Length: 248
Image (cartoon, rainbow, N blue to C red; front, side):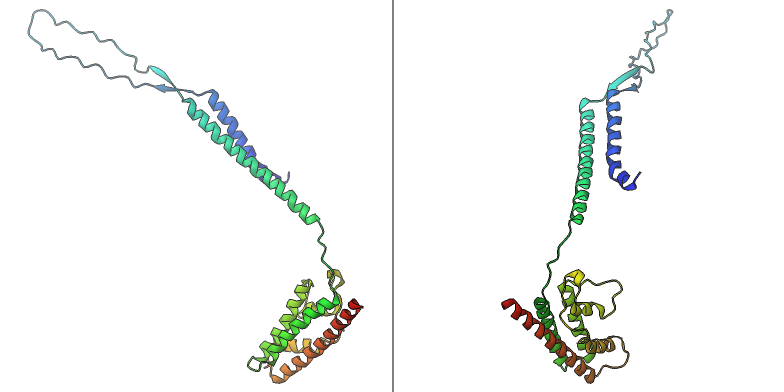
């Protein structure tokens, strides 16, 4: 039997057994008890005077030492006990029903396929251009460390890819996500917006900035800025061309 089914139904079974035991106990509610034998009644003191005749004795009737009695459990205690058990049964039954319904709803929700709206090259290109513009502002800031500026600009491209709906796969390298954003991902409904080699220059500078142990100087900052501007120019051309086709 499935362990999940046992975990789901054992509270209801346990409470049902308790309810059966309570009903059996209610049918045999009389219990026996032993009464403590009462103390012997006080006998008045009679002084012993000398006399020729013996003093009359006062007979004392013996009492049964273990006279049994019967005590009945009040009806309200039995009723209260049954009410508590009935409430517990209702709570457990409600929990089981709620678990079954919520599980069915989750399975139904997972079974409904989610249709992602297909993106246009124009809209995707405009979003990536906005990310590149923000990256260029950081690259132009000479007060910012060149390594930090290059990495931050690339991270903006990764965020743009995630916003566009490009999934991050388990085996992705540092540049695969952004590469699929520019070259397109048909499975995710993301169109191609740039040529294959336009990202190579910036990707090389990014890998140097992220993984190289040597210092990242201003020359590498300038290389990254030039690569980002070439990419931006190509994306702007794609956006303008798609806008013209849509207008026509």
